[in-house]
Image (cartoon, rainbow, N blue to C red; front, side, top):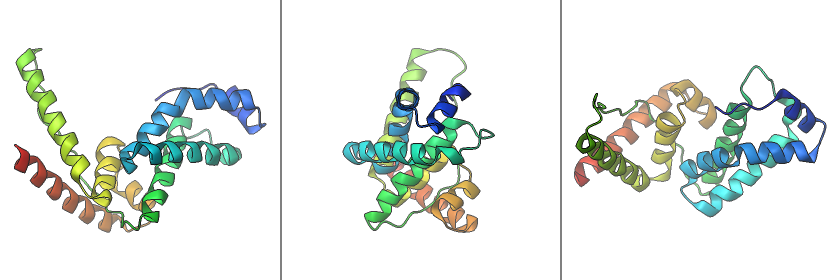
Length: 180
């Protein structure tokens, strides 16, 4: 996570535009990427990113420095992106397990090429998932939220989040094996 000086956040709380610009310049790529992983549309992700910063700056007075600023900001971005998905009339679904493959101990180029090929297959399969499944996969595997956090974000029960994750994971695995 990227660190930011507390003085910059204090200046933002005071409405200083230069401090807001500094926060924007520091975090815009991270926020855009989080939005894109939820929405899979560059224009919508750009819009969600801008909206996220506006929400963050308007509510920065409620920011609690016990939480890293980047985590707080990315959470706003993910929630904003989910709201955009809901406007598309999509049911949000949750996923539950990490998919890790063994990483070779040595630096054998052939092994790394195989891993990179596999990563490309997984990314392609994720992109083919329905929005609701892709959302859960991204929240769990990419953003690193646990099921309780996902349930809170999506406003569903943790058990529902786990079940939805398992279903989405099954769909993802089917797509991966189908392409293999």
